[in-house]
Length: 220
Image (cartoon, rainbow, N blue to C red):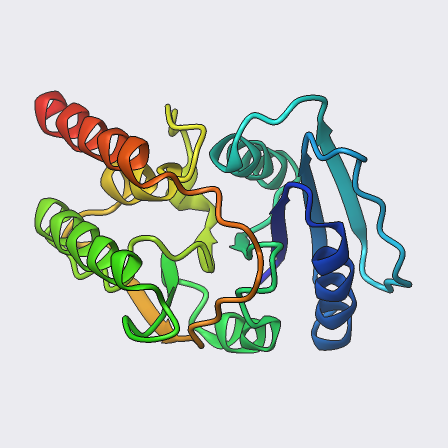
């Protein structure tokens, strides 16, 4: 299994350097950092024995855009899997080992958080509702639709043209790539909330999710 670890990053240099250091002690898999228009631009200060690649957007275009570009990189460079992890240290890098242990034939592995404290109440409600809606639509159990800690088999992403550039790309992937026959596994991961500022805007992002669902339903 040739897995690329992809990290979309925006203004998270301090946490990112800690994360890279931890990952390099856990695995020798290649790492791609996609700097989504950070100011100043991200520089990795840690010694890293992994093959490390940094790609950049001049301007901030959104997490979804950074992920799509990371998928393109993985496809072009013939990786078999892509493991995505956020740059803000809200994903425990020690769990990477568990993701890599899963049968490589499994198309999607999702890190499942516990919907309780320290996850804020509004996020618990939002995550429960979105996970339930998406599970119903794709006819497959999705326990944590908003989790960005995932391992994709690259074949799942072949010939897919995603429209979302923000956080809802991860929901769009589930809607466009998953059906009742798709092999999925979930891994329990810690629910971590630190002092990192969230970029999620409750009202506007709720509208964007509803727009995504509407577009999916009317396209069927």
